[in-house]
Figure 1: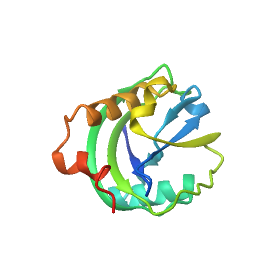
Figure 2: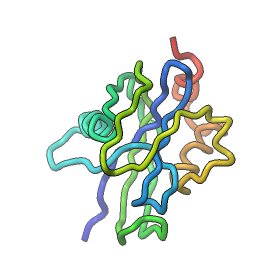
Figure 3: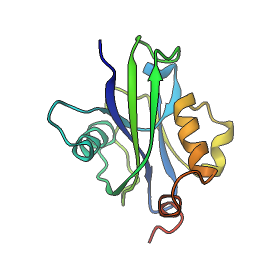
Length: 146
């Protein structure tokens, strides 16, 4: 059994809100959308495919945001070792059509997330982003949306 590379994204809409999805695979925590990279698939192509499958959103201005390793999380429904490759991107859409993998969605200001039940790896990604540990360009993407 090898670690599984996955992609995920903080998706920012025109109202400068971020999409979170509630997942029963992750103990009903909110997570960012994403999924596995198929053999031979480019990471950004995998991200676009996964986002389209899970949310029916089209994304653009994709920028790498962070990398994390998740080894046998107690919050995931199976014993898995993931490599999370996370991005930040934009969408012009706000209407989400969920597939079977998620139970609900919310668009939220990052300032509002403190009281939400967010999966710990997602929370860490958002906290690092908010604390400015990422590049200025990436931090500014969410606030300079035209």
